[in-house]
Every structure is written in C-alpha cells, then in structure tokens.
Image (tube, rainbow, N blue to C red):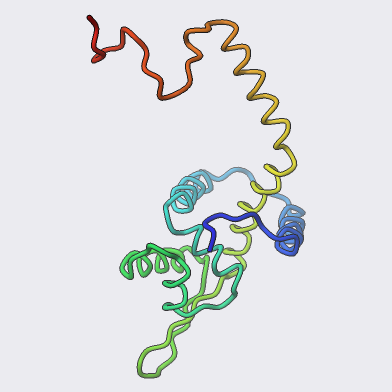
Length: 169
C-alpha cells in the first residue's frame, strides 16, 4: 500500500461533501482549548503511523487488527496497539471486540476520523491545483538567489571551501 497516495475522485467528492456540511456551521469564539487540540492533533497526525492507519481504514472500511497490521508495513504490534488506542481515545475510530476465542477486534473510522482524513485530503487537492504555481515560484526564487550570489547557489551536498572541518592545504 502506498504510504500517502493521492485520493481517488470518489474520495475527493466524499471529502468535499463532508467539508461542505461542516463549514456551513457558524464557528464560536476561539476557545484556547481549540488551539491546544489543534497542536495535539497535528502532533498526532504528524507521527509515523496515524495517517497511514487513517488511509487504510478510509480505503478499506472496517478492518480487523491483524488486517491493519498487514496493511501498515513496518509497524510493530505494540506500536499498532498504542496508535489505535490513542486514535480511539481521540474519537477517530471505533473498536469493537467480539467475545470469541481467539479474540476478534475490528476498527472503523468515526465521523471525526473521516473529517480528519478530509482535512488532509484537502492538501492533496490543493497540491494538484497549485503544482505549477508552486514550481514557478520556486524556480523564480532559485533564479533570484543564484543571480544575487552565484557561489551561495551551490546545490546541496557539494562541499564549500573554507567550511569548518574542511581540509585546506
């Protein structure tokens, strides 16, 4: 499974519908708790696993623990358990345990999880719509930087003489 592949047209339409439903609400005065929540959630989704798990559940719907473990390559069982518990605590997914032997546990996204996925889907949409503008801005900046100081425009990784630790004779 690609780590952060672009969303399908169906996913984009679903996310736009979710955005339309939620952005039509009137937002209350900014509560300081909102800032704290935003910082916590950004930290959480910036971790290595949360967005991959969100993507897997968005693509496949309800999944068992072992299925998630197979889809999220490289994650340990302990890290998968910790990440799923934190996501459940935040209301991003539901966990359903069936009283059978061996235990069967299923996970599914909640509306909160879907809207968080929608928020990050928006980054893909924005990137697709603005790729040429960003590339043009980067090229213009690089040209200005190169024209202003040709020696400073060395590509990354090339050694510069006179740097600390460089050998001089």
